[in-house]
Image (cartoon, rainbow, N blue to C red; front, side, top):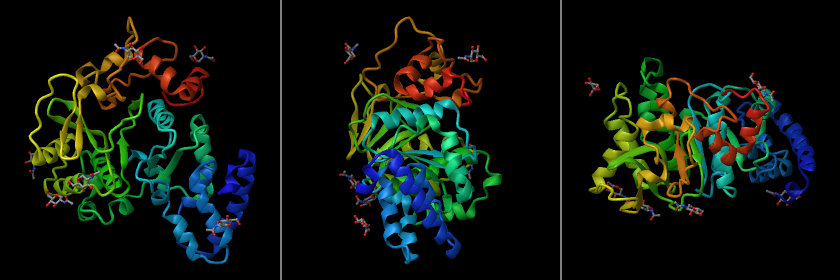
Length: 361
Ligand SMILES: *[C@@H]1O[C@H](CO)[C@@H](O)[C@H](O)[C@H]1NC(C)=O
Ligand SMILES: *[C@@H]1O[C@H](CO)[C@@H](O)[C@H](O)[C@H]1NC(C)=O
Ligand SMILES: *[C@@H]1O[C@H](CO)[C@@H](O)[C@H](O)[C@H]1NC(C)=O
Ligand SMILES: *[C@@H]1O[C@H](CO)[C@@H](O)[C@H](O)[C@H]1NC(C)=O
Ligand SMILES: *[C@@H]1O[C@H](CO)[C@@H](O)[C@H](O)[C@H]1NC(C)=O
Ligand SMILES: *[C@@H]1O[C@H](CO)[C@@H](O)[C@H](O)[C@H]1NC(C)=O
């Protein structure tokens, strides 16, 4: 590990050397994974201590498998921030980059992992330069990781696996959403930490480890939540997901699921003011924490405000992107609320937009 705390240039050479060794293996082993090159995608980060293992044990292929449990290694402290992309797109809109950048800045000492379905299908040779090309604005953050989202692995050993095996994604009306609802539960069950939708801008750290977010009184969101690894709530939610599955009802496996499961345990009182409520060891956080602008008003984010709101009662802002059928987007310099939020909370993404870099708006 000491090896990797030298200059970043040195790190790159060491990584290159290790990559060459790793390639040696790939010719000899058939069952390869992306973890080796994904580590190189983020050479500055702590996951690369696992590269040490390869180097030290170049003649024992079984060690490659140890290395391949990469999400487990990166998220082993149970405090990661998890984002999920269930489409194959590899060029996320700037809002996704802003969500990741702002989270990585707020949670500087925690791993921020973006699980992308599109990465799972790319072969190892192409991945590394691809990753750097696509996300240069995030390369200054050494706590950001891009990992392939492999659903069969994600759902393994959870109540969701039989459902996943049985279902036919092509026939599902809302597969992108429903699979995302399932993945976030399984990932948080296994790794713990915080799940966030990719349209959430982080402002300051969330102090609670186990929490759900109220999107309105007595109604839970599943766009952001935090639970310790193997928390009962995740498991019960996965059970309930499968038992009451109805793929034609939007949100039935999402916010409505969380609300159902929460209600099994507690009577949730309506909020009186800006207080949070507690259910068992889960905090049900006031809508002010993430939804100070409720969804009917989502366009407010794209308007100019007389005065920039303080958002003092909020930890992060959910921008309700799914409401945004009009494809409203940030215009740098426009002085809209979203313009100011980008400038302050995801400056690198913002600067790239200002330079007209080819990020999708
Ligand atoms: C690999 O070698 C380095 C230095 O030679 C050592 O510090 C490290 O502990 C070794 N790692 C393992 C897993 O043996
Ligand atoms: C919270 O309660 C659940 C059971 O309801 C338990 O599995 C979990 O370990 C508890 N977590 C903490 C941090 O106490
Ligand atoms: C988890 O929840 C179930 C159902 O509510 C309960 O039977 C079980 O005892 C709980 N487990 C723990 C560890 O709290
Ligand atoms: C699923 O939801 C739809 C729409 O609400 C409803 O018409 C249908 O009966 C439901 N299916 C099942 C199996 O409950
Ligand atoms: C919000 O927080 C800032 C900085 O902590 C403080 O200066 C300001 O007075 C607060 N505003 C309100 C309305 O509480
Ligand atoms: C970026 O592009 C816009 C529209 O194409 C143009 O008006 C603006 O001058 C460009 N800015 C820079 C810095 O090139």
